[in-house]
Length: 625
Ligand code: SPV
Ligand code: MN
Image 1 (cartoon, rainbow, N blue to C red):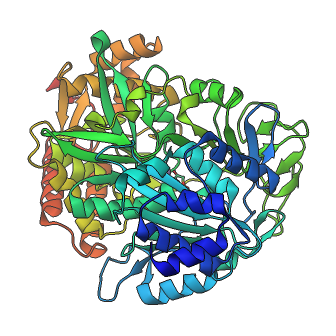
Image 2: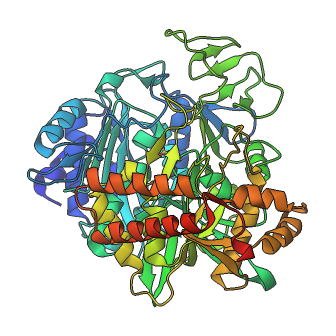
């Protein structure tokens, strides 16, 4: 290491911590750590290796410094973020954009020099009086072509503890990479605390430096803003993937059981709160990951891995009937962090719609809570925050597929795109081919806003591949990367859309939550050509007979023909409006739309118009042709 770096590290670290750092032969990492120790000026520094003792030190520190409290069930802890620090801060999350670079207005940016200076001024002395944790992790399985080593600096033991549950330990991976500069860097400080929460959220910043593969996060605690390896690393991953010819996707990866012991792997992208985690956790199937996937090409197929090894999931609405597997895990002994839930007097946990017996007092993110409580703006305070979360290592899950640690990844047979859509897409549909799927399903993904977000309900928001919030390259380039990725593969994954949120004219849901188990089985069969399908202008839909059999086999339910007709009636006016909307967005709001996007969307529009001429607006009789 450089002399200056060595001097800083020797001065600031005690001998055991210094030796742990010095044992890694990576001068770039050493310089980075020394730079932020000098700037942020913590009182104390702890360097964690992959040993159980070091991991336990972090876990205990979170309790010791009041960021977490022990709960009734062994291993469970509760944590609160500040009342106004409960979600990803999109406004203050910015890509540091180098001079002259153009990325399009859909992506939040700040001039690199200005932003770099601003956040470094904020970081100055920000860890005053606090302990800094230096952590090493690995994105993707260890020792694999997918692995990306990461170093995280944080003054929050809660953040570091979350990462222990969510990511593979990476100290040994750092040993393996030697002096390679190819790693991601994260600096986080919760800043000054009051009542154990970040006090100065006006100086909350999440700045992403794509030039240095670094992210700086200040004056915030909420996981989506602070857990470097999650959505912050995703921006760096998207850029890296784009340069190297692979994909970083906001996708689950899961194994679906077919006939005769067959398991086929699927990945799936859905915007937040659209059923991504619950799909990956359905009964009877196997989970590899619930949130982020890396996908690479090999032997003319696609292979995928879970970037993480744990789940940071939304807890609202999890109930014994619909989420049996998660319910069991959340009630068993084991290391679980509950963030922004209600903690009852007997140190139990409660969340919105857990069961029909809500407690009448307790402590939540707003402090002491009671029914009818309002915040300072007169807004009612729910029993837990809508975005309240649980963090667990997937080792606690019975349906965890050990293949998740396979350094080769799993072969992906199908990719699914799903959004919240009350009236346009049918519940499940297969695209004609790779390009058609990427363009009319992935790149055309929209989702309706819910009561869980501010503003009007039911407004459609464009969210290509459910990755818009995390893009660090232009939308056009990202879509082109996706198109290129599957182009000349002999065996590309089939691409599907799903829609769990169809409603009838009176606003009633057309499907039950568990119906998705049938759609998954149908897609699995389709990838092997085991069932036929009906061609529509937008893709292939299931035949009634196949669904009837699957509803009976999978759910033990009858599936009346009327239900099929209601759900799978093809809606031409809505599909035409959607196609026009997407064409308009790619024309007006995206600076570098590939021509192919317009060609494929226009061809789809032509098919819709022709079909409309022949059969009218609403068609439920394709199968009678
Ligand atoms: C999401 O919102 O998509 C999440 C949680 O997975 S967060 O970490 O906030 O991104
Ligand atoms: Mn997510």
